[in-house]
Image (cartoon, rainbow, N blue to C red; front, side, top):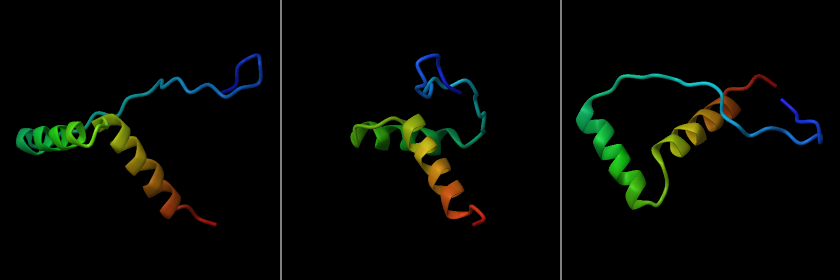
Length: 57
């Protein structure tokens, strides 16, 4: 998606809902907080890396 000025939009417009154990989720969120990052940022980073690793050339 591009804007009028030709720059790519970075606005997120989709959600992915997943279910996981509460203790696991809480530990992940706490670890992200300790590492000064967000859970969403780390999940997006994982998804992008996973897609890159598994892309067909």
